[in-house]
Image 1 (cartoon, helix red, strand yellow):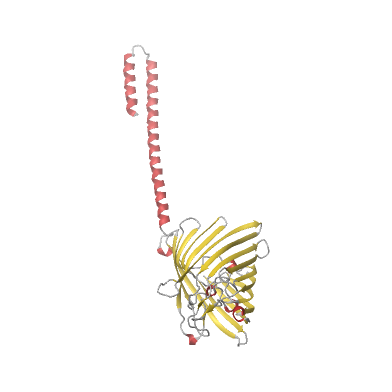
Image 2 (cartoon, one colour):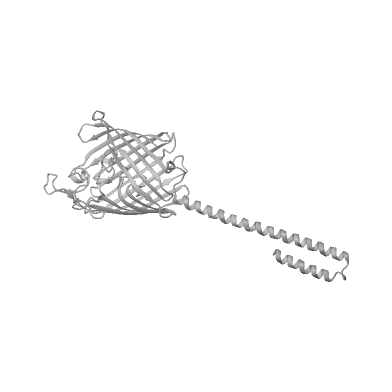
Length: 424
């Protein structure tokens, strides 16, 4: 642009020299002034052009830097130090209980449950978890009874899993993990709260909907006679049908093909209430399950807010589509209040009736009626939050009965439990 300007000025100078005789001195001075202003304007425009070009190049560099940082953040864990990626959590529970079964003497015992876990957040989409528990090998109880002269207590692997979030709201998990199926208000109709499944789980939640599925190994070793995998699919909705009302409801199907299989945990004739047969009646030889468990579950809970304390009603129902008799179970109850803050409290009531082959006994609640299936009875609870992370509770299992389907006459089973729970 400057070359064109100089050429123009030169041409104009020649023209001016040729016309000097015809142009007055005043006109010539005015022409030179106009030329000076034009030259200054050209210089200003060129400087502005350079400034804009440099600013554009800087902006592009900054955008590229931001993109690089975002990509790095997505690939890397949060924080600048490895310790920022690790989360420690756990709980400790001290329990005292009294158990009254039939005509037996009342049994009392002191028990503890201690659990601790680590979660490593490898990236925003990927985590790995590890959990340990002091207790026993049972898949549905982490309790250990104090005694034996103060002997050291066993420590078990309670969790070991990887969790990946392939897209928003979705998850894929593999290993020994927390139960991913929704349990209405912690219902123990199908699963005990301490049960940690072992297998692969996949699910999604969003826009008031949720979907959970899993393939779980009861026994994965092909060298074992009772190698068995079960699977389940669950779907539901969570919505607000009116102001101050929240409704969660859904259905699930679980297929446990255990007919003809021996026990997966416990003594050879310990089927936790489920029907079984043995090759030598009256002994524990060759005992196997009589049914598969094709469980259809329906559940719902309704929470009423806007009251002095939140109030929740819940119901859970299951039917084993494979069994010819003793094939259904249900529970229903209500909860008032919560223990979310220091000084808060909660009261609860529940009644359940679970027939012998309604669901797979090994995995369900270990407390009502002594645990397993073929039970019925009432459950009253009360909790008080001494501090944010410390809750005292009492649970009374009243007029529970067990074994009526198997023997034709149930056995009375009552229990009172006092808990002190600390979480961190």
